[in-house]
Amino acid sequence: MRNHAGTVAKVVHLTSVHPPFDVRIFHKECRSIARAGYDITLIAPHVRDEIIEGVRLKAIASPSGRLDRMVRGAWRVCREALRQDADLFHFHDPELMPVGLLLRLKGKIVVYDAHEDVLADVAFKHYIPKTLQRPLARLINLFENLSSRCFSARVAATEPIGRRFVFRTGRTVVISNYPSSENESFAPAKPWAERSTSVAYVGVLSADRCIHEIVRAMTLLPKHSPVTLNLAGTFSPARLREQITGRDGWEHVRLHGKIGRPQIAQLLSDVRAGLVVVRPEPNYMECAPNKLFEYMQAGIPVIASDFPGFRRIVNETRCGLLVNPLDPREIADSIAYLVNHPEEAEQMGLRGREAVKARLNWASEERKLLDLYDWLFESRGPVRAQGRRARGSESGRGTEFKAGT
Image (tube, rainbow, N blue to C red):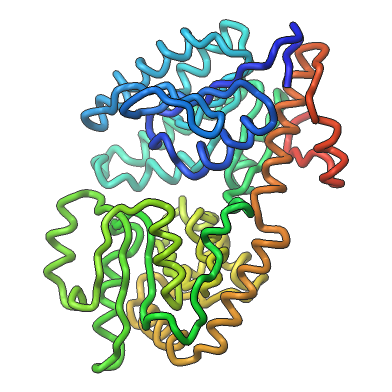
C-alpha cells in the first residue's frame, strides 16, 4: 500500500497496556497489515527493538506499576510516536487518548481501537475505591466519547462497543476477536478416547474470571472422579495465589503458569473441555473473548457464562454448555456431563471447530481492517494501492462499516 506521495504508507500501532505479542494487536492486526504491504511498526512495552514477521517492534520501557504506566508509559509512547512520523496511527488503550488527540492536531490519520466498554470496565476495577468507581467511570466515559469524535475512525471489538461510537465524523467498524484460520497448531491432535480426563482454563486467574467458583466446582464432582483442572495463566492480583492454593479443590488442579501459544495448543489438544466463565459484570455481558474461539478452534466443547455475548455463539453453533458462573454446582455438573458423554462432547467440539473454519475466523475481519485503511487513505487523496481491488473481489462482501455518515 502506498500513500498519496507514492511511497509505501507507514502505519504505527500504539499500546502502553498490552504485551508486545498480544493476540489481537500483534498476531492478528499487525501481521495482517504487514502482509498487505504496509510499513508497520508496533510501539509497546518490550525488552528490545526487533522485526518479526514483517512487523517492526519499537520497545519502550516496561512500567514499574499502574501509575507509572498511565503517566510515564503514555509519555514514552507519545515521544516515540512523534519520532516515527507515520501516515496513520492506530492506538489500543483509552489512556492514550491524549496522545491520539495530539497526533490529530498534527494532521495525522488516527484510529482508536476499543477492546472493551470503558464505562463498564472502570466501574468494576478492584484497585479503585468503590466510592470513586462510578464517578470516575462516567468521567472517563465522557472523555472517551468526546475524544473519539475527533479521530479519523474507530474500531470496536464487539457490536455493543461499536454502537457507542455512532458519530457524524469518521467511521466505526466492528472487528471481532475471531481466531486466525492459519493457526493450525490449534487443530485437534489426539483422538478423543486418548485424551486425559481433564478440562482447561487459559487466561488471567482472577476473581472476576471466576477462579474461586472454578476451583470450588472441582470439590463437587463425584467423590472418586479422575477429572483434573488445568490452569494456564497468572494470578491477578498476585496475592490471590495464596488464597486459592489453600482452598479445597486445589488438589485436583494442575497449575501451568504463563505458557506460550505452542504450549497452549498442546494443552488444549489433550483436554475434553475449555472453561470461559466470568462474573456478571457489565463489561462481560456482551463479550466474546479470544479464548472462546481458540477453544472452538481446538475442537473442544466450551463451558461458558450464560450471558448474551456467549449465548449467541454457543447456541448458534451448539459447541458447548452455558452455566450460571456464580454457581460452582452448575460448573461441576457441566464438567461431569462432558466427561461422561464423550461422543456428544466430541461432536460439540467438532461443530465449534467447523464454525471457526467456515466463518468465525480472522479472514473476514482482516478484510474489514484493510478496507478501513483503504478508505482512510483514499479520503486523503489519490492512493496507489497494491492488491486492494483484489482483496475486495475475493471477499465478495464489501466493506462492513457499522456506523458513520
